[in-house]
Length: 319
Image 1 (cartoon, rainbow, N blue to C red):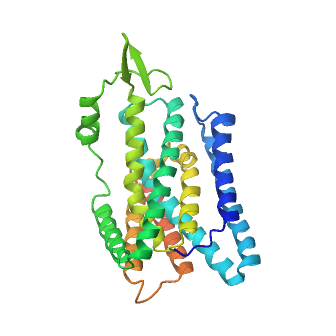
Image 2: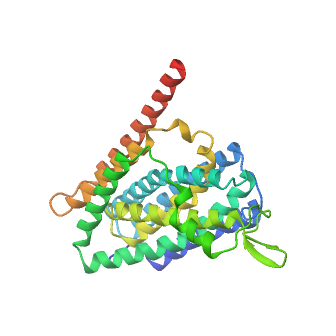
Image 3: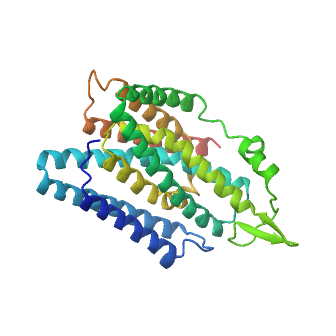
């Protein structure tokens, strides 16, 4: 499997991830009850984006000095494109998390704790999936066509059912958990489990965590093949994915109060998936330039956000 990932690059990336998670967990208090304000979410969003761009710049300088300017330009652009795609597709996670937290009535002060462990689980799951996917592609090139067809069909399905909401009351996993576990009706602070009359119960917070993890697994099945359409280098795929995930909680709290204003964004995300699916299906006939892909994705997301805000403004005026 071809990759630019030298031991120095892997070590540098791993160090950044560990340090930032440690700061979040032990300094900021991500593992405790904490209500995230809009201002705090905005500050952390800027921090994550700045850190991502700094990593891209550091990657460019390292590759420029070791492998040459052409490789540095190509890989840095792949990283930024992969990050943008993952960040855009992750917006769908935000809508689902809002639905889950509303369904379980998770207090705002406890949501950050759930998402912290959700992110840790997502890092492990996606790392495994990315290396498995990279290995499969090196062994079976034709699997790229399966990924492309899957993304195209997923995009069409997402577009068609964009306005439908998941039926949590009849969610099979939730029903199974409630049949096989004792679940308390109330929260016990930030605890995932509690004791009542000497019996151990799972709290609603634990059920919310399980569904957050499952939702990320489902979205990863879409987003990881999408980045493989940009590059098959596992270092670029993993780093762009992880940086997008690390900033996802901040984006959630930033958008939590205004998510309903972006009613057309899901249609834009569906078109992005369809475009990437087509790009992957054409990979051996015509390789769409990475820079063009970046521009297309940025335009699609920008137009869908603009159209959403225009629609909301018209509805507010008519109402």
